[in-house]
Length: 535
Image 1 (cartoon, helix red, strand yellow):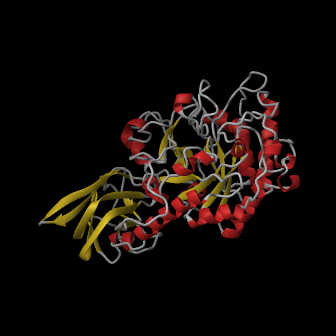
Image 2 (cartoon, helix red, strand yellow):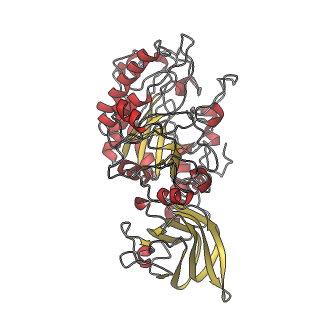
Image 3 (cartoon, helix red, strand yellow):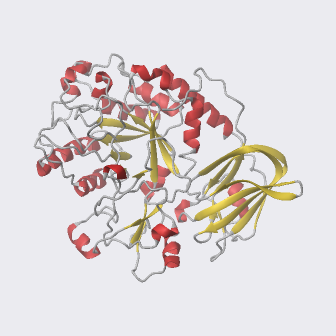
């Protein structure tokens, strides 16, 4: 994010709640509704041992909304607004609405491109930090209704929402709490009411909203004061009006992975230690859900967030999965001089493996140009990426394998990991924390990619594993990893063998596996744009 001394004319990403800004993350406060069936949080006793805490961590599971969101895997950001027409990343809030005038805006084209690329949800920047609204808000004139576009009768948010419904994609909104145009910003009670009114408009006028995205931007208002955001007030409204929506980044459902490179951690635990205050006092002032009680500044960008060491002194645990955001271009908004800097298909594939393939959801930004269309430069890269992924994962070479395990249960046999049924899974008897699965592929096969999927519906457990191939009369390691979670993808040099072994070296309790796959990536895929280095 931009520092105060940076040149605001230089491209800068959205403000994330990062540690180096003193604004990353938060500490979740738990209410007393601990008896609900959902187990996406758990309170701990001061006397509990580390082993007991780790065992409890293995039983924390995602809420229904978190699980549905995780299954989307790959979602889209659309940055479009005043910055597009001013050729900037950071608006000041003083821009003339008459500048906003796309000549050929087509939200259906946006959503079709996104759908073709395999993404399942679209988040549109309804209002960025400049305060310009892409919908005709009743509470400000600094919006599309004051622009010449569609004669002042247009509604970008509405057009995107309709296109998503038409094409079967989920819809989400980004609403910047920081507003450099609104004069009440910095007068905390007054602005919070204004912001809540705008949030209500977005949550009631556009059908189902699946993700509400807040960042941590918090500059000074015209009065020289920083706005104090009433996060809990915002959360209550979202839970009331869109109860299935996840609240992301500055919210209790989804956290920021910690970089804007598109690359997640090699070790990514979804269960986080949290700090609770007195539960009774929280319950007395809050009727919110278990983990909606409040925020405290906390750095969640470390390489290690959920290890045994991090859990050691926790007073509570919560399921808090990561989202990995990145733009297809160096900037978040469209700039013509970046047309030659669109990330190549191979770069996007690498990002996919390093985000979706590391227990995260990938949020890829694709900014429309001044016409209001996604350019051919971006489309070519997206098509090339999709082609590689489709060809890679078309055939699972492990299907049909004979699978045996050192331990399993009658209802959860080893064969479940290759039965193509996402509702079945393998696990071991209680107390078993290491295990081996052996796959006889029936004949020699050649592959260079592996996919492992845990059953996170019962918790995230595996902490260390390796893959081995039987060659030259011996088992030889060809890949290893730490956490699995929702999905783990590994790439490695080509392996040819008939027998493969998965050795789970460490698990927090009985390990689980819903599916296992072996794949071969295609030869170089012909694309229209050359492979270019990422910015």
